[in-house]
Image 1: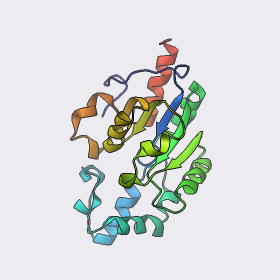
Image 2: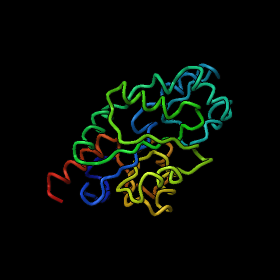
Image 3: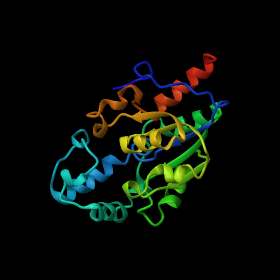
Length: 212
């Protein structure tokens, strides 16, 4: 696993630029286990998380996008998912360090995706400055977050397509990739990869403490 001493992420002080874009699923919320559970139950399979090496679930299950969305809604996965270890504390640490937190998540396929996300964060004790939803591959995240602010210090995401989009947009100073099975085969951002939101918050805290 990556850690705070095994990357080349640039430290940006909140006084220079306080805004951070943070993805939701597999960055804050531990969404993979429940969706795998329900898809395995549906298909009679035993696919494990480390086997999901790309973003297309139809490579691992007999599904299409509509079926996946139905599994999410029928089982209220977005409403009941658990936070990743340390993720809620990491949000608070980032806020206390002086950063502004903008949750941008590809949940616009759900008619209540934004409201569910906000209510979940509130219920789990999270903190945020804004919550926005995009349509995934049908709508780049930069189309959403550039309406919030002209410049962001970081984007924190597990999807390399979102990292590419952030770089191309010119609105983000630095990218942070959360390590996941589906992005380890592409080493373009291996030097920008870290194992958790918590580790990223610790990195920024250390930068401030060191007076960078």
